[in-house]
Length: 111
Length: 113
Image: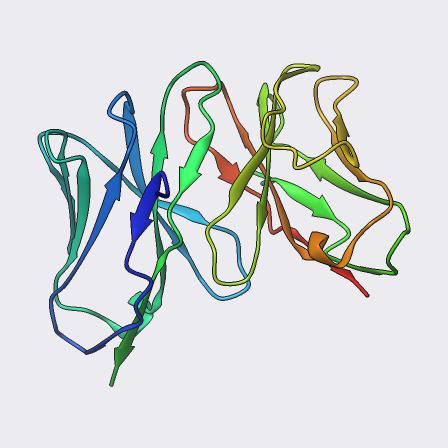
């Protein structure tokens, strides 16, 4: 079983739609969680950190469920510019603080 | 300010050759990471430096891969006797400290023919 699992998609949604991605992780000791965005042939960039209390940044909402070991990302009012791959990232804070990435979920927002 | 830079942006080599990939982290960042990303996959951890020392090299796939960071800034990833399976994008990331956000460079796309 992969340490971080995501549905690779693609998710094809019309502009203005709401779309949600989920991600599960296997290491219950994981401490830090993130969503990164990666455009085609570009480097990953931090979209937002994920906290147990949930957090929102404009049209984006991230949630963490430690008991079920899953992380979610909700995008409201999708824009064409949201088309990208969304990477779920777990950092187990074991001393290395290396990032463990999911495979990424591809999103295409259609006009 | 300047972000993480990596050179070359693309490298095409033949099977069996030796390659070096360079990473210039953000100034003042003590933590430096190398990841490898294959097509359709997320990045996979290779090695982590804190300062000059490799604090965790558990992700290096085999002894053909080696990395250095002699002065605690620039890092070089070295691959000996390249194989076609080494073809991937090699990403470097740096952070102010190990618990801080990692910033990624644009990557080096390595193609082994």
